Length: 323
Ligand code: ADP
Ligand code: MG
Image 1 (tube, rainbow, N blue to C red):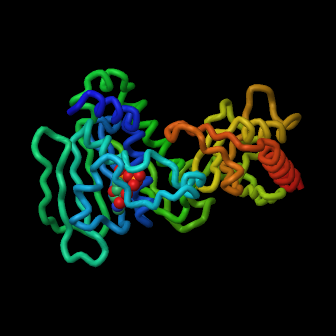
Image 2: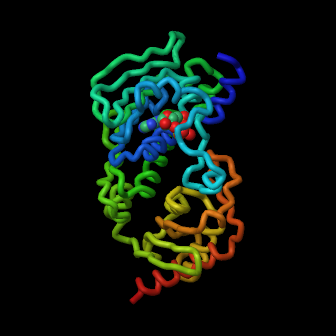
Image 3: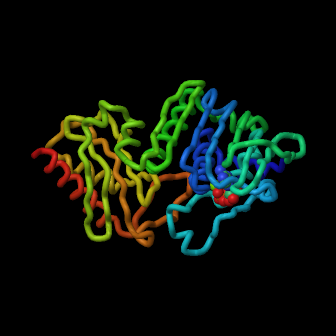
C-alpha cells in the first residue's frame, strides 16, 4: 500500500471505536432495524457488525471499497445537514487499507448473497454465499500493517469501553433500532428498538439511573428539546452522563452543557453534575457543521437560542418535578 494511503486511512480509523462508528452509521443509512455488534480484545483482533438493512447488490460490492465511492446523494444541501455528515465514501476504503475485511451481504430481491474478502495481501475475492438479508462486516487484525498506529492503541479494556460508548449513544439516538453489543462473548447492551427513548435509556443506563430521571418536552422558538434530565438527587460526580443529541446525532456543545448546569444552580452540591439525555431539534442552517467529522464538538451560528432553550427546558422540567 502507498504510505499516503495508509496515513489517510489512519485519519478516518484511528481506533476500533472509529471503525465501529463508521460501520454502524452505514447500517443506519441502510435502514436497519436490528444491528448486532461483536468485538473481541477491545476490537483490535475482531469486530463484527451485522444489520438487516437493504444490503448491497453483488455488482456494487467491490466499488463500495473504493475511495470516494458513495451511493449516498451528495448535494450541497446535504453538506449543510449534520445528519449525513461523515467521511464521505471513505470508511470502507480506509478500513480495508488497515485491516482484513470480510463482507457478507444480500440485497433486497436477490436470491443469494455474496461474500467479499479484501484488505490482505491477496487479491480481493467475490463469491456467492448463502446469507440472510442485510450486511455483515467482519474486521480482523486492525493496523496489522501499520505498527505505528498500533502503538497508539490503549489497553483493550479502554478501546472496548470506547466502542461501548459509541453504541450507547447510537441506542439513545435511535430508539427505533434494536442494538445488541457483545463484548468478549458477553452481552453488554440490548436495546429493544421499540421507538421509546425511555426504553433505550433504560437499556443503556439501567434501572437505578432511569428511576431518577425527569421527562423534558419543551419548545422555545425554533429549538425543540425533549428527553430526560436527572433529579437533583441523581446528580453525578462528573459530566460523563451528559448526553446531547442534535437532529439525531450525538454531539458535544459547551453551550448546551453550560445551560443545563445553570438550570441546576442552587439545587445541587458543588462538584456534582446533572445527567441528561436530551434531543435538540433545530433547523440545519442554524448549525455550523464546519467541524471535523470525527470531532463531536458542534458550534451554532447563534448560540443564544440553544442556551435559552436548554436552560428553560431544564428549569421547567425541574419545577414540574418538584410538584
Ligand atoms: P459512505 O457511507 O460515505 O457512502 P462508506 O465507505 O461508509 O461510504 O460506504 C460505501 C458504500 O457502501 C455506501 O455508500 C453504501 O452504498 C455501501 N454500504 C456500506 N455499508 C453498508 C451496509 N451496512 N448496508 C448497505 N450498504 C452499505
Ligand atoms: Mg459510511
